[in-house]
Amino acid sequence: MAEEHFLAHGPRVAIRRIAFQDYEEIGALTRESADLHHPWIPTRETSPEAFREYIARFDQSAHEGLLVCLRHTGAIVGGVNINNIVRGTLESGALGYAAYASTAGRGYMTEGLRLVLKFAFAELGLHRLEANIQPANESSIRLVRRLGFQREGYSPHFQFLNGAWRGHERWAVTREMTGTQTPPG
Ligand SMILES: CC(C)(COP(=O)(O)OP(=O)(O)OC[C@H]1O[C@@H](n2cnc3c(N)ncnc32)[C@H](O)[C@@H]1OP(=O)(O)O)[C@@H](O)C(=O)NCCC(=O)NCCS
Image 1 (cartoon, rainbow, N blue to C red):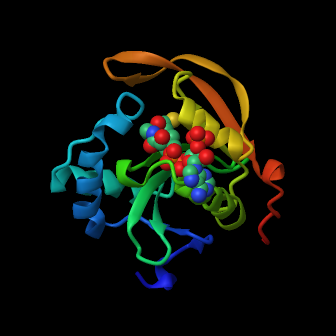
Image 2 (cartoon, helix red, strand yellow):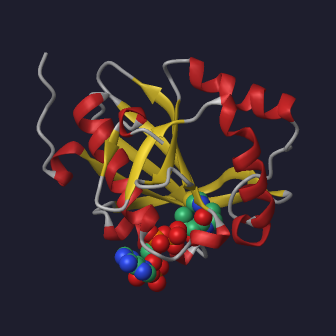
């Protein structure tokens, strides 16, 4: 993978936008990661049509679909979406993210999500990112805490997952909290 495809990179991983060409690789990674992802994120259909529909969401300016890749091989190790971007006086977005089973727990998502925060604040001009996390999802809470998010509160019956409306903790980080400069203009 040529470095110019990347939006940003750290020592080990880089981030880039998702594309239809990622269908096969993401399909295989998603299948191997069913146990890791359940019951924390919604299960998605894995047909090419469903994937095309899924990535069409990122044609809209309110959604960014990003992948975390190994910097030197380009292999995909995770995904981070910035959903429901609201501009104007909020400049905020909601994060969704997942690692994949064969490469989880090596620090790649910590490095990748840190790049996403920098990209969102310095390049997209966002000001606040939130992550809504089920209280029992300890690795996700550790991840955002490590990156400087603060727990803002608890939202009962927040998201329909795994057959029921699940309450989530709301964690958030602002540009000021990461020390990122305001983008010019
Ligand atoms: C939440 C999730 C994305 C975290 O992914 P991850 O792969 O564990 O993330 P990282 O590897 O960056 O996590 C760091 C862990 O790797 C460890 N690690 C191992 N080697 C490391 C290295 N070389 N450098 C840094 N950290 C390293 C860290 O100590 C840390 O351990 P901890 O979780 O016990 O604190 C993952 O568990 C997941 O996909 N869960 C299912 C989906 C989900 O819950 N999504 C979020 C919904 S809110």
